[in-house]
Length: 326
Ligand SMILES: *Cc1c(COP(=O)(O)O)cnc(C)c1O
Image 1: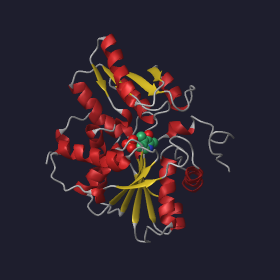
Image 2: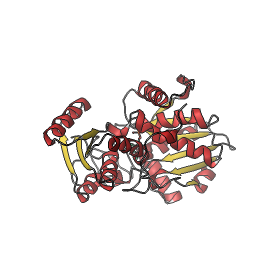
Image 3: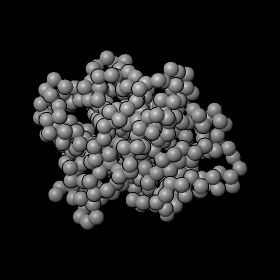
């Protein structure tokens, strides 16, 4: 197997991120709940995409790219963090976003405006249209460019979360469970592969906040990342454990998700987001209610960031989205 440190990587994140025990929530759930603070990765408002971008932007730089394209929904955390990291490295970010969700200058779009980023919208449901548009724009510019897929979720990006699993293993705490949100799949794929390699006693559970076929997306990404690493780890269906927490739809707050956001805010003074981490933590709460965790278990929740999403929509307004105070 190839070692992780043989891959090109640009240090962008402040690592290792802290691990904290959620004292009040642990008492409530009668198990040990810990939080991995990947909201504190140290650039932008923090978040999981920074770990992926350490590998992706290293590849971009190695290929001589001056312009970096990426995509996502209008309020994509990944797009905002890609722009922030590209700016830091002196590359030019261009975001070609799906015209879906909140397109007003709020949340992440506001942060992108502060960074003076070129943001364009394409009215499509198919990312292939957007990747084609990147090629048109890139060729018209005549500068070397690099395309990062939605969520940074390819094999290279997933290495960021293989490395995160190693970071957790190196800290020496034997977690029984590791819970993360699944939006494009790279985080879960990296963690599940990393767990296979470094955390054999930890069960990784992915909470799906979108309706894509993650039952095939996540194992495919795991297999591709395993191939990059040239590991002969024996991957099977048992390595990927998924639960649907999407509710009314991607980026539409759910009642359970908003209850989890408020619980974390009231009990621990931490602000989960309505799109990813609130719904993912609601999934953890549902598992606890079903008796999935024993008192002696140590459950680690990945706080993958998402703060921009808190300020994007009308969390407490009537109409369209679930009322937060319902
Ligand atoms: C992108 C994102 C996720 C999901 O990670 P994927 O690798 O896309 O599955 C989770 N939380 C936040 C805050 C994100 O921005």
